[in-house]
Length: 257
Image (cartoon, rainbow, N blue to C red; front, top):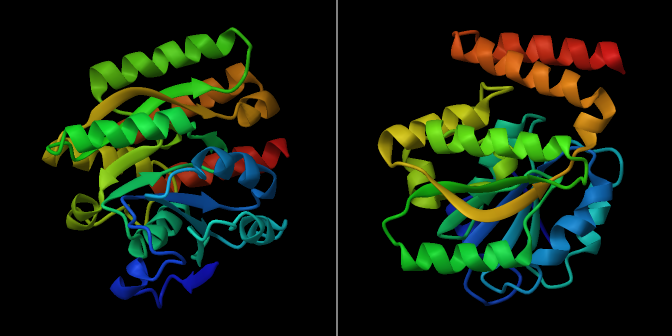
């Protein structure tokens, strides 16, 4: 497994992968203490020789890096290190990516093999496509999550505004042209990126699902978490800076821990 420091990665690193199959899509996964999720995330993606997985770690101390190394049996898993910030971590992963396409996948979200297969077929059949996201699903049987999925579907249909837990994808060339994620955004980095992509290239919501964990909703309580997320989204829409939102978010998180 290659380990590349974010500040030393070069364009040449993109092609120095551990086997000779060409890379068409790079799946970038930001991690921070996600050891328990690494295996389930990697397993559905193993059979795709045109895909590489780049883990961008923000300083995990729970064995995440060992878990990543243990999964690297096929030679297309890489690890980069970056400051602890989802935006900075994803930018670091994208910097060493070899694929024509980037998929930004949260560590607690599963991209099923069928969804990745359908994605590959779709983007090859639609070369004009520049960016998009998958359909949001929650990996939990409670009915309340079906309402959440419905709401997210409406938001995506009306506003073309998916969030990061929908596995945002973008052509690497386009991602580089718009400057990637904003390093200064501690929250709402996904909303900012999608808005810039919408303004420039348009955005597609594919019907193929990804399944995100309900762990934060279950830990915080569904209603509290849902209302808290909506409150932060509203403040951001009203012009509150991401740094101020991050202060509010982490203050509440620490208070509940």
